[in-house]
Image (tube, rainbow, N blue to C red; front, side, top):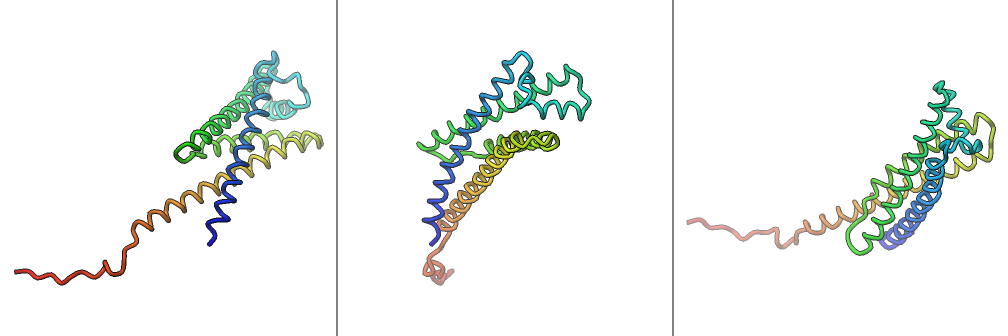
Amino acid sequence: MWEGPVRKISNVAVAVIVAIALYFALAWGYDGLRILTSPSYGLDDVWRSQFVFAIGRLFNLGPIGLIKLAAFFGALKLAVACICIIHIVDRFRCMMRGQPDSKVLEAGLILAVAISIAAIGPAFWTHTSDLMREHTIQLLIAAFAIGLCIFERDRLARERKAAIEADVAVDKDAVRAAPRYHA
């Protein structure tokens, strides 16, 4: 009864997951490359590096520590982008055969949520609403994609379970056995 609408919702969910993965691959990939190729690891962009300065102040980091922290966040953003690219390639591979494994994407998006939370805090404390809005939107997009991945994984598990139960079903007439005579 509900299989048709759930399947349609699942197809839409897959399209949204791929679109969100593409967004993070492009946006965070560009940002990660920009940070890692900058001579000051992105600290010259004061607007986007406020969270690095705030975390550095929290842990009492010096200039070298700030540069290492900025490089660390740049590498994390690039890693999330690479995970998203791998997931997109896996989705296209699975169009031909097999089922996608969204656990890797979920891990990358959880990393994106953690980075966004780390960036929202300093934006909140400095009352920078534009920066807070930017990071909050990324946080919500990543959290929404995680929810869709969980929905899709649950649907696939239910389909597999239903297929197994259908194979196990026994005909009622087959349950009765003929009487056995032993000589």
